Image (cartoon, rainbow, N blue to C red; front, top):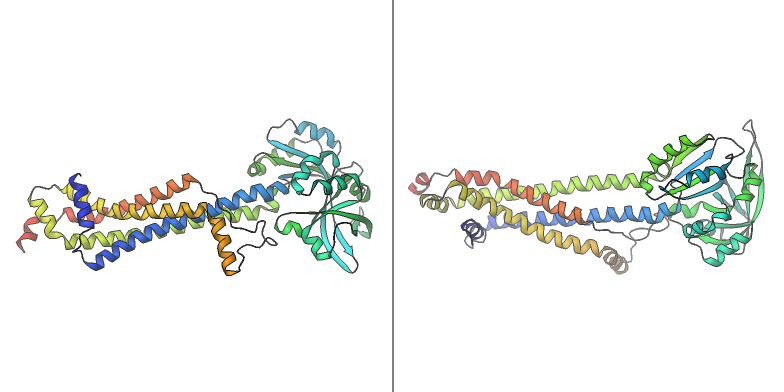
Length: 411
């Protein structure tokens, strides 16, 4: 073993070492490991939330919407679909009519946002709604059929096969209100939607909604989904300005973007906070080495009197401190990777054991703790911890190299 490694390990594992120094040394190792463990775990949770946001919520809601300024709807929307279909960034396009009104059953009322869809685009919409094949086929055959979110059905105590009344407000050209139009719809299925969407979203036929609301062109606008939903804020304006009719433009970040922004904010705060935790733990390395240098002045003086150069002394104490950081980083990374890889199972076990629920499916778009491990973040965490540990050793190592052998041995 090279001399510098031998000296560093001997100084670190010396059984005659002051007990307080050993305690501070162990504290620095544990602190660094704990910081790495929590950082890897929380970053994996944030990655998991971002993945579920994309796979679940963004699979249901449109990534971009173009709504006609004209009250009669979007003129020549079939041609607009044909032109947009040539863009390889778009995965799906469909026309829509949006009807906001009230559902009534008996004395109970519930506000609802009805998305009216065309059966011509049935295949993709069935994947999004996640209803059974039988319910979807029944919906396609019956123009008066409606699919309602589970939250709406629970609130109105509806079941499949019931009839429900839909009240749609009428707005005249002078913005005055008339008596609402009433439709009786057949409940043919429930939508397994995410979080709050289940409490206010329903699906009906576009032709019926257009006729009821007086949308003469048959569609109010177009809805798009992109291969990369996070590119929607850039793509939506680009395509919207190129369209012939005047349209209002919107993307998912305006309606559900607060959730994505919260995830990114928490990720940044967690990263900064836990890096500071690791940095504070590294200050214990400074304390440990400073006390070790003061305790081992005679050994350092004898080494220098035997011909040891300052560089050897500096490398010895830097390596001693780096060993503390490396051991802490190693066990922190290992535990962090193991926990992040099995977080869903561990969380479920804790929920079952203590009869608690961390996330409610009625409020959030998922009812479990997601986790997705990114190895680049694991490597970055380990590198940052080792660099901070190395920086913490500089001052004590330089102080050790400045010890005067004649002065120390003379006493």
